[in-house]
Image (cartoon, rainbow, N blue to C red; front, side, top):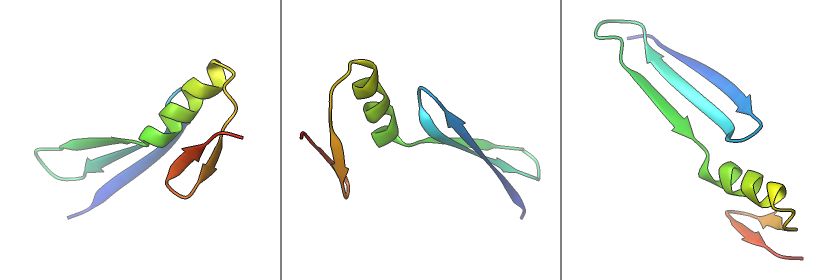
Length: 59
C-alpha cells in the first residue's frame, strides 16, 4: 500500500504532516506537533523560553 506524506510549515501551528492513502477508502491522517504550537503561542505573547530536549525552560 502506498502512502503519501505532505509536510507543511505553518506560522501558527508549526510543522503539520498530512498522511494520505493511495488506495480506497483514501483515508487521511493529520499530525500536529504540539510543542511547536505552544512555542508559537509563547512567541506571540512575547514570553522568552528555550527548549531542552522534550521540554521548555525559562531563561
